[in-house]
Image (cartoon, rainbow, N blue to C red; front, side, top):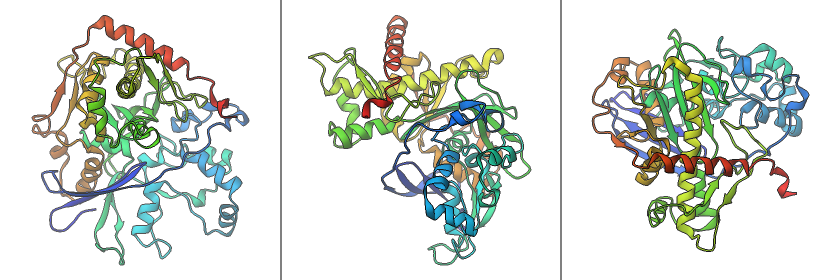
Length: 448
């Protein structure tokens, strides 16, 4: 939303927290506030046996495999199991949307005339939108039995959607930008065609901008959108790999095990040892995402000896985040093939990184070591919120596209982490990680 006094406000609605950041015309954060909250996970399992295409039944239209992670499966469960939802749909007073839909609906009036919309990137995460037409896929919603009238209107990422209504502290302010979390980070990192980034938050999201051509992955990645900067603008597509548990593993060490008192303590704790001592941790708490897509996977910690201590485990948790990112990037590289989509003009792949966890210097160095390529961290690591601000600023003329994509000042003060690990060590560690991942499969029934 754009302020008349030359500021852009951005709501960063994450999985575990809500953050509001105000940016000036130089895209500098001048004020922010954050509140954490509890999240609840869906039960893994169900579905897919009823459809002829199995887990890949809707991939051609939406680019996604069937998974409880995406909105359609949650909606089906609500329609089948919650009487209030069933009755509401029958009466015509129930509507559906992702969290951005709910926020915009409330800020524009709620039950008193609130706007029922979503954007193309959030819509692309529901399993219900056709990637090519950017509209709700008629065959999909018919197959799933979802009434079209409960779905929101789909808009671009950068356009004036409406205004904040009376009753809020800032009525009359335009709501002009809306993007999904990882897509906003793509824009915040100014990733053009052929450029990739990884956002480290509760989970981790790695995206490669493939330009106006959607590329079908043969290695477990998703075909999705990067962004669409206006109703008439070209659509930028992307290959994406989602990692369910990244920073959430650190929160688990803090909240469930009590090994650390704050998330920031993990860096010092892990730095007390030079290696994990042969310990490998795979945080498959609720299954594994790309490139495995195994809902039957559960977390494991292997290689423990009598000499293993909490520093080894802390370092293994950090390594787990980096190994997962490497796995996705390797798959992305294979999909890109001979196009060289992951190479910059110097022939060296640079992974752009952002998100709260990138403040951890040890994590970034481990990432560079395990990949064998440099990692670049911008000055402002909260690029998700910045991307949303960029989208809104473009829509109201606060910024132009060249201000975002052509500015040479952005990378000047970036921190570059270069690999120092020997290739033989890296190869051995990757082999051990693969063994650890295999141990997580087919463990869903352990809780019975």
